[in-house]
Amino acid sequence: MSYWTAASTGEWDTAMAERPYILLSCAMSIDGYVNDTADERLLLSNAADFDRVDHVRAGCDAILVGAETVRRDNPRLIVKSAEHRAQRVARGQHPTPRKVTVTEGAGLESDAAFFSEGDCEKLVYCASSTVDQARRRLGEHATIVDGGQPVDLRLVAEDLYTRGVTRLMVEGGGSIHTQFLTSQLADELHLVVAPFFVGDSKAPRFVGDGEFPWSQERRATLAEVRQVGDVVLLRYALSPRFGTV
Image (tube, rainbow, N blue to C red; front, side, top):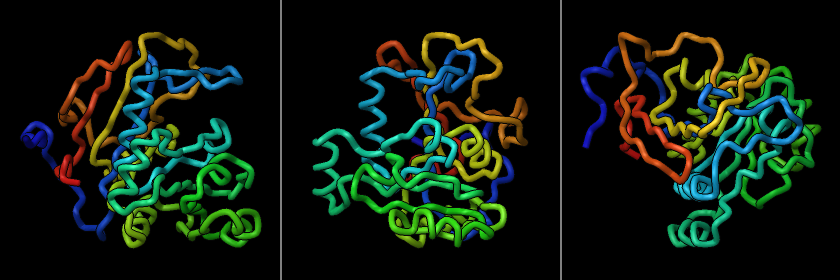
């Protein structure tokens, strides 16, 4: 079934080189926050939803997060389920998708879980002016790629496609989600809502300010609503490519 309806149509940028199908994934509180201001990471999801996310990861060729997420949350970004890993291997894939991060200043530590966990390929897209610095700091642990000055996510997506990435999962943070959405690079959004409030304006939100393609006049298309334990998954179709990969 096609979820791309007349209500969601409009000018959509197709004048670009081929890129992966891009799926954005985020969990937030009822009031739209993805974390609080405490030192420990705020858990917005539950075991059942973590398993769902693991299954979605297993169906992708690469997982992308911003450098701030690497520094703040120290995510492993691996497929945890042995069953899901085995299914990937049976399809001729690596047990875990490639890891991708984007940074302007190359201020990442090589002992972060992004680099140390899993033997999959790691890719770091950085600003042209920091490529040499990034290669000195991280070249033994990842492939360093010039992402433009400043980093252009459109170029990142196109380069990933040339490397065989046909399905990309983007897991944050807010700045990265904002850039993918405002650049019309997102095909699908998985938004999980946790049953509580954060209530702190200093905490990070799902997205920041920007000119988004969806507005009161051009609403995003809600393709699915699913209860997963005590959280709810809202699945949005964001482009005519929705569900094609």
